[in-house]
Image 1 (cartoon, rainbow, N blue to C red):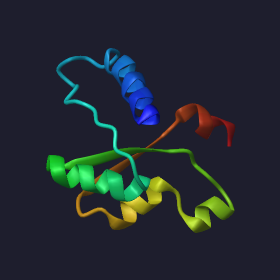
Image 2: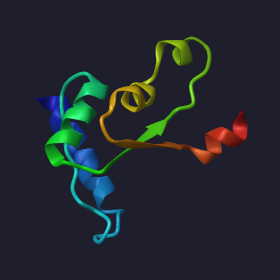
Image 3: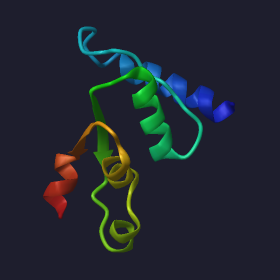
Image 4: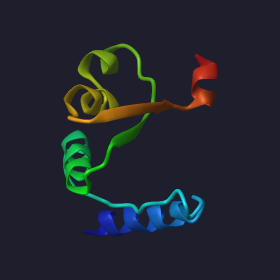
Length: 90
């Protein structure tokens, strides 16, 4: 419960940086990341899931990241966004 409240507070701060016409809401779920993302997408009936990617290499790429698992299992379109600063370093 404490971690969930902290996450909700952090999201509330971030939400203030998003233009009102683009912000549809936020939600914190406790559980395994990729199934939780997919469950939330289904419950909210979204058209597109947007996830960030850390651009892992090596073993993490073989095992699969949360973004990869969402892409591979989602029943709707998924957009993976990479950090341009991280891409420039590789």
